[in-house]
Image 1 (tube, one colour):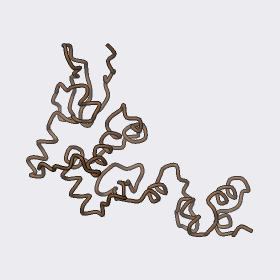
Image 2 (spheres, one colour):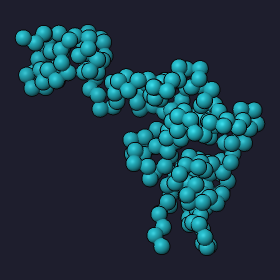
Image 3 (tube, rainbow, N blue to C red):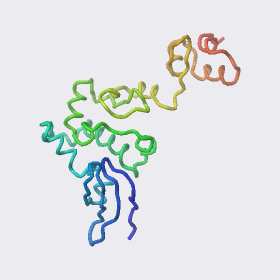
Image 4 (cartoon, rainbow, N blue to C red):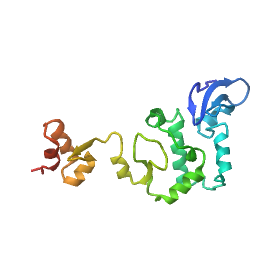
Amino acid sequence: MYTRDLYNQKFGRLTAISLVDGTGKRKWLCQCECGKSVIVLQGNLTRSHTLSCGCLKQEIVRSGAHTVHGQSHTRLYSIWKGMRKRCYNQNASNYPRYGGRGITICSEWLESFEHFHAWAMQNGYADDLSIDRMDVNGNYSPENCRFATAKRQSNNRRSNRVIVCNGISKTVAEWSVTTGVSAMSITARIDRLGWDTEKALYTKSK
């Protein structure tokens, strides 16, 4: 039977050390960041269901923040699960762009949906918005996150080119809105025609 190799892969606070011999469902011996070892079902690791030996959850319980939220079928809960998956599940298709680049989730959100939910409700969450990191190289934390429209997130992608003119930094898309010159024209003027930045941004097309 095919067994996915999880050796040395990291899932939250856990690192898979070795496959545990035995019948039935596959299990892995994992080392937690707190120093404890724990045996975890392979499925619970790959689905991001278990991300520590239990130490983080105990910290949350001691803080009094752990309650039964009853929101496992809500859109916000799906956002939270997706955030954990792309940061800690090395088998997720988008892991290389998140966890693979070192993007992590702050401890208060990592295993506590209640903490994440409380922050979201106090910071403008709506069903037509998605979570967005203001610094795209930073982590998921209250200091670096907001809820934004798809357009705003598009302007914040790493692939968007940032142009500085007169001390002001904006993406090509944002400069296009500001000056009325198409993004394609701005890029072509700078890259192909060799125009200086201010001329490329503000010269109206004939």
